[in-house]
Image (tube, rainbow, N blue to C red; front, side, top):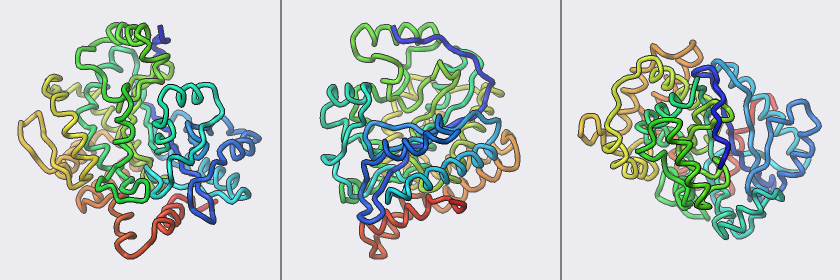
Amino acid sequence: MPSTEYQPSTAATLGMELEIQLVDKQTLDLAPRADEILHTLHQSTTARHFKQEVTRSILELNSGIHDGSATLEAEMLQLGAQLCAAAAPLGVRPCGGGTHPFQDWRERQISDFPRYQHFAEHYGYLARQFTVFGQHVHVGCPDGDTAIWLTHALSYYIPHLLALSASSPYIQGEDSGFASARSNVVSAFPSSGHLPQFVRSWQEFQGHAAELKHAGIIGSLKDLYWDIRPKPEYGTVEVRIFDTPLDIPHSVALAALVQTLARYLLTERPPQPGRAALYCVYGFNRFQAARFGLSADFHDVRSGKRIPLSQAILDLLQQLQPYAADPHARDCLEQLALRAHHRHGDYSLLREHANNGLSAPQLVHEAANLWQPANS
């Protein structure tokens, strides 16, 4: 049975992970140099914050635990600068975005770790196609039952969160027509999706995980690629729906939104929509956000009406302002509100560049310029 002992943590503490593209400075294609960059980074005192991923063209940045978004942003900018410094001598630039616009999945190399080698053996070509880039936000929960409740409560907001982060309109050299093509790649895996409706307590979650393990579907909870999942060893709920944004401040703003939303939910315990209704429309709402981003429609199970997702986001951000921890968090919510008001996300910016005549490599160049921290 997977380890499912829940380690309590302070409610609404914050952390995040960013999966970053490694691109060749000359060709702007993905560069399989993660192991070499990690070798350099592991000489530093912050080595624990950098991690290799499934393929050798991805590198993950992991924050520490924070009470608020201001210190999280400071740390992530510092880690980003260290990554840029370590990558530069190898002719590599870090870059944000949920997909690389023109890389060929067939050229990707699986990382040389037993877990990832087993992953590739099990999933075949899907493992190399999984060269996509996401942001994961962790928010603290005091106990397992609370984590299960919060996972269900946050699921209502999956389309809001996905639309605000969407940054992957291009894949395999084509405009996908989606704001987030990355989300479709994740959905290909059998353990993707969401926490089952019938799981209502930590004990029930433990039983469900044990059944999945007994059936050979998962080896550990890491094999659950749900949009939101409990993370018992950290004492958190992990929101995994996001594309990696094009810049660090936007990724921090999304983390601040998750923290503020969790604080509101845990403090007020507002009535929740029926889970049967919520998960009945879950796939539709998720698809709408992935396909149309901030211009999507949203089926609101609370009112029973179809409404513009951008308006739902604006209403939410207004509601959350009193629960923001500090001025930095309030500023983050205001920046997200501007995006929703103008219906302009990272995916929109990339398409504008393409419509202005930029080639796919030039799009990568512009994206890498956005991600490069100013002090690196």
